Image 1 (cartoon, each protein chain N blue to C red):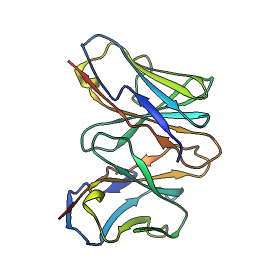
Image 2 (cartoon, chains in turn brown, green; image 1 turned 90 degrees about the vertical axis):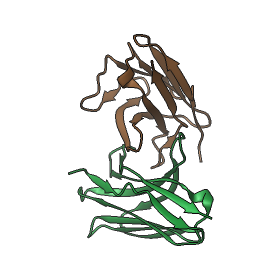
Image 3 (cartoon, rainbow over the protein chains, first blue to last red; image 1 turned 45 degrees about the vertical axis):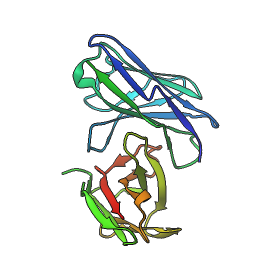
Image 4 (tube, chains in turn yellow, cyan; image 1 turned 30 degrees about the vertical axis):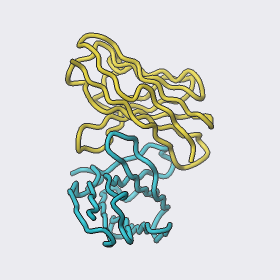
Length: 115
Length: 112
């Protein structure tokens, strides 16, 4: 399957700072990328969908000003958690799709801890 | 009611057992059904993918979809300790892009 690389795999930051997470499709062009959040022993919750070159579409209840998503190229999307708080601590996962195949491929996830 | 229901487990089985994992769903418009395996602190990896009703087999894994009952299953034959992981069902609509709706995941442990 296609490879999606997510970086960093783990990050610890202080409350009030911002953190950027990168998601790259290594061997295909990702027209659409998805960002999920997963709490321990819970399912993946879709946060937003981003299409290359356009604004992201956020799911209900997700603050767009807090979770900034940029999908400036066909191989890179970034999620920036702004003014992070301890309750933002979670596992964030991206997935990418090329628009032709029916499946999307997942990154390895980023464990964010806000202290 | 959640759109997709999945027993979180944990499910513990001896090595070599046949494992049955299941999900039910409420939206009859779902057409694509997937099973993902997720190891601890890793991203999900796609195991099986099925369109509409029917069975699909891949090695030790068999996926079944019964749209009339809104019920999907994943069977693992000759289970191995390396199969210990969380298994998530996911599904999506036709024309819904790649937007997936996930179950909560079932934690499986295969013991020696």
